[in-house]
Length: 302
Image 1 (tube, rainbow, N blue to C red):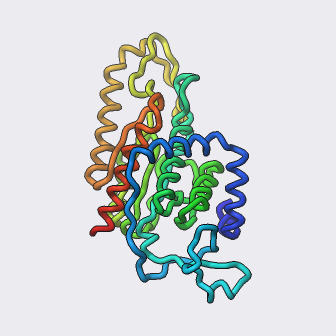
Image 2 (cartoon, rainbow, N blue to C red):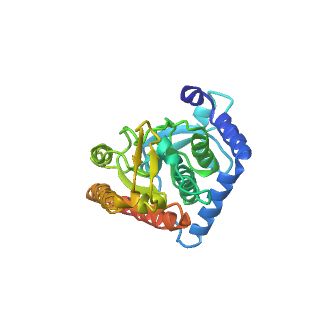
Image 3 (cartoon, rainbow, N blue to C red):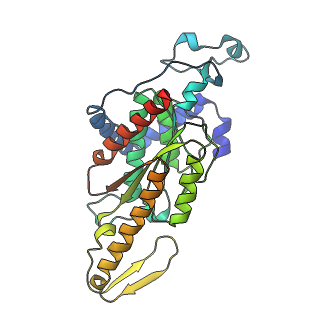
């Protein structure tokens, strides 16, 4: 499916994204509502002027300045193209969320799954970024970053269709220096694998934010008595006779794991945010967006 999408025009992709958004409005509406709430509490993002190095051609979209139209490129076809410059790539943000089976967990009917919260936070982040003039894309989607409603729709297209895969950690891919990444997941995977991803990107000058999303039951292990635990990703089952007898040890190991991945992020100069699904999404989105705004301004001043 990725290859098909790469061969379609930008207009075709936008129409497809709008169709998908119309078919599944609740998530997009919720993301926009969360983004609006957070936007009221932060100032607009600072932007810098255009550079001189060519980045890419893309089709003209409503809202583009006519001065950005490249008439020579447009004359080669029936479409109208605009020329984008390199600074726009440098101020781009790559978004990623864990779509592996473990993210489908929710400990109660009144709670959303970790996957649902990750999707919501990612889309709300994308909505805020494009409103601030930044360019966004999904890591692993093979799509170049873009801004405006079209940029948001392309991200939504990937999220709603799982185009970017379902791995518990992203692969380290070449990105421009000074690019930014925001990653959403439970990050309960191997610490060394997590370190490889973060240091792999950080060594290339990429800055990032980690948002760890956990169900409250994963934090507190509130169960008691005889409980059978089943893994979501082929780990098998474990029958515990008295869960309360291992509660303290479990909490200690989880805290140690979180401290380890938080330390990896901080050593790389990345941010780390812990979020529980029983808390409002704004409690994660506001500090995330504020931190990312600071990263972009810091990069622009270098």
